[in-house]
Amino acid sequence: MKPLPLCLLALSLGGCHLSRARPQAPLAPPEVANSIQFPSWTKDASIIVEGHQLKALQIAMEDFLHPGKPPPKGADAMTRCLLAPDTYDAWLVRGERMTYVHFTPNEAERCGLQPEVMDPGASYAISDDGVILKRD
Image (cartoon, rainbow, N blue to C red; front, top):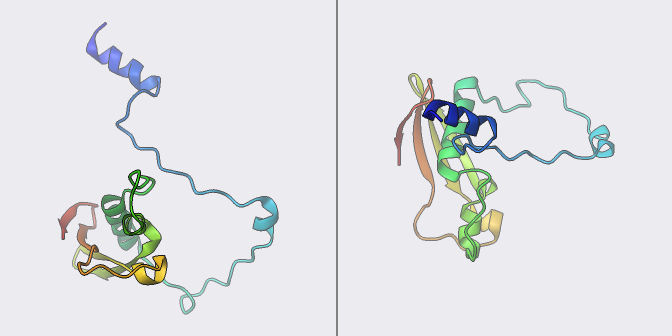
């Protein structure tokens, strides 16, 4: 069998690991969903994350935390805490044709742990076309 048809066969059977499946968020049962009333959507009562910022945040988040990947077996409490997306606050600053993203952990408040001396946060500069220009 020639290489191209073999690759196409592997792709069609789902045996290719080139694409990552994103974990699905669980859905609440209908009785819970029916009890939810959305607020009035106004600029004054909302935090607006514009399109380029949202794209940059998603790219940086996926690069920094690898959502959906579980902590290693036997990981200590601090490691588990620092691998959880909800441990972090994200700061966004709009630049010229780019967005700066900074993640800073809040391990004391979110995990009940004493903060480490070093800051395990991260900073990114993401271009409007989705390229990581710099990470620190």
